[in-house]
Image (cartoon, rainbow, N blue to C red; front, side, top):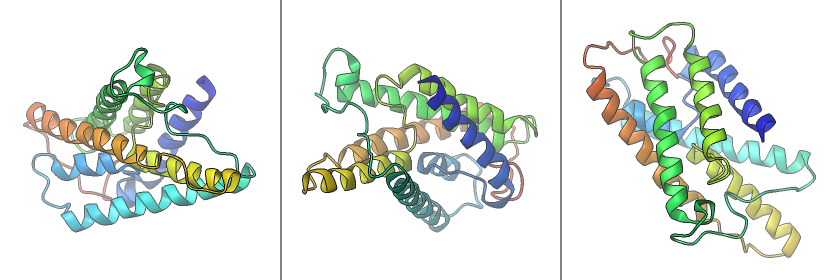
Length: 216
């Protein structure tokens, strides 16, 4: 859905510009992992990373509750509503497709964040637009495969909200809540890969402080 893709990407872009000088505007545990692991990063501790991830998950729960209330308990599942096979065709019905799609495009998002928002080699003005359009690319490319979550917090929020919806509609917690954990594994792997590739391709870069510049 083109409207959904651009709405999500535009929201992210605005939040990156708004909160970049405050906290770095990670808004994504995979991005936090990538920033924490990038070469030369000595100002972002494990305790900082844990605090960021906790805040991101809390924000996901809050957003889910707001959506849940505003839509009068309407929810939607994460990925294929019929579940996934390990390997199947089309790829939108398989965990293999989800793994490849989420890892590749979360890598894309995290790599763009590292290159444009944490390095002094990039433009100081266009980083938010580049990050937003990374989400646009992922939404169009893999939206039909995995839903293009690209963010463990988003996956957690969607699954948590759907779990609550299922409890109200059916009177039991029957939904496959563990889906968000599988998504998170592949998305974090994409973030780790982004940190490795960035460290190898930006040997001469100087790194901006978290929350002190355009970091995102």
